[in-house]
Image 1 (spheres, one colour):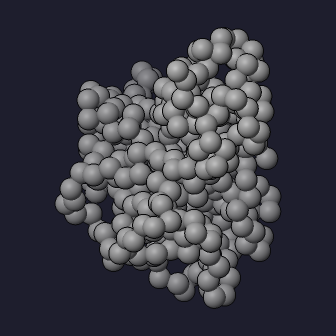
Image 2 (image 1 turned 135 degrees about the vertical axis):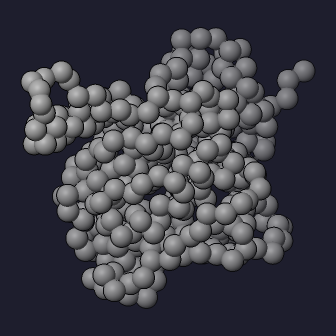
Length: 380
């Protein structure tokens, strides 16, 4: 498994609000045997996540998801959220010092088993933690270029900034007023026609209740800027071609369905291609009976199409039951690419320079530009 395949999901007509485009994803049949609901936290999203002994980080954790494969999900009520006013804010995934004393809700591990066949996990945090942990240990050999801190602490602390959905202009309004289609189990969110996120759930009832939670998710700086400064995008419009008059109702219905089919093909090729045509490195997080929770990272190729990190739950056939993604900025892609090249070169700057086709001085400049100055030994 190295690609995302949204089998069983059909693209519906897009809806537009200013610069925000929402594209519904509809299932003919729900994924059997799995339901997801939301677990709300009462501390306005501020939390601390314990990853292990003496290892934790502080971040915004507005809610968790509970995956239920017990077979009792049909009778389990999913907890919804309400759309209301909230202040603009940014949030970061930042490993906290061991001495931090934050009076916040504490979460034990990214994914934690609950009584019965249930698993609580923190949406998007699984994916972001995978990105933040990328080559986190730093150099394993004391090459002369690296500082003592690099050898002792690696890339700790490491942080990335993100914006809450409330501060993405137009997103809250779009989610409040847009129609939810019959059978809708997911959505693709665009800002200025740049893919911001994909969200997929196993059952239409799960989606209907979790649809508003998209304003509590994290979005990258690029998406915030596109939504703030981008011009309104064109709406989807079905154009019936000229034909024999008068049109029968059956002919009009067939022509409208053909317009929808053409839109779906254009969307999957032009809009969603960057997500679906890319290869990913998948890391298994938890096996849940016939289902598996994964997180994934892109190939980190700078200068190309947008790239996404995310998490997914698949069944035993590889069908996607759950999906949530986060679009990386170009700077984040370059950091991931640089860390991969350094690790492949065993953290020898000269070897990394040869692999990148550049000079050692340029590699050092890129390391500093990426914010990894503390890794380098001070030079006279």
